[in-house]
Image (cartoon, rainbow, N blue to C red; front, side, top):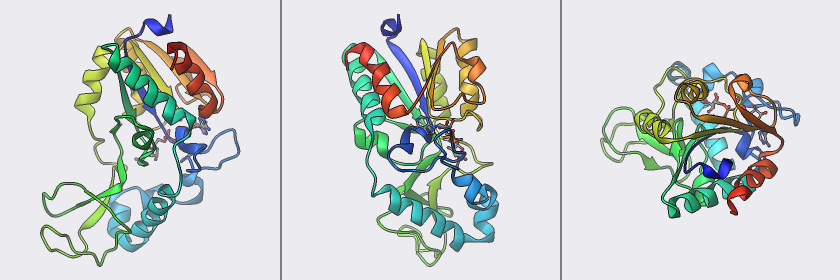
Length: 241
Ligand code: OAD
């Protein structure tokens, strides 16, 4: 039974935030064309693109950061936060790993591991200053508060070719979990797309909750297709939350 699982690892992608009004990257059956069909991801999501046109890349993230501040978590974010708290009270765990750079899981009340970083934060390319919250926008003319250099700040977003965050913690949690659930992700970007195979190798049950079958849909034991705002709360309702 689903509710026998005490330790769960949930991976989310941009589909969980789609109903909040944030565009996905590759679109879906709802007609959303996705961000990467409108702009070249190599320009806006790579260290090379940033080196070539830092103003253009800052502007791209400034616009998205401003938009994220105007939206709100949806029922899928709240349902995961409720299940995380419930399992913790029972001595279990729901490790929530997201590829999303928005803060909607946190705003719904969930502790979250952001493997692709957080757009609301920034860091300095040149010094050890800890990640900092970005109040407004980032610009090439900004100086670093710690080292004083100009033009060294960048969004705390993991770009293609960079190493995702929290990988050790995520693999530790996978090792403890008995159920792996993938929500709102196309399963096309590694290493996240490989978690389902790792989970299978570890003998875990695997489940996909998505609008469309993902690239690795065949690897899941169970799948439900629909809007995250409907199917995620329906899934967590099995625990009575
Ligand atoms: P994608 O845009 O690749 O996939 C979004 C998935 O969400 C698709 O499978 C859709 O069917 C599904 N979807 C859309 N609307 C949904 C809804 N309302 N409810 C449920 N599912 C819905 O987004 P990701 O898989 O998150 O990385 O993309 C992975 C990574 O690629 C991102 O983190 C980003 C991107 O390039 C970096 O920037 C490094």
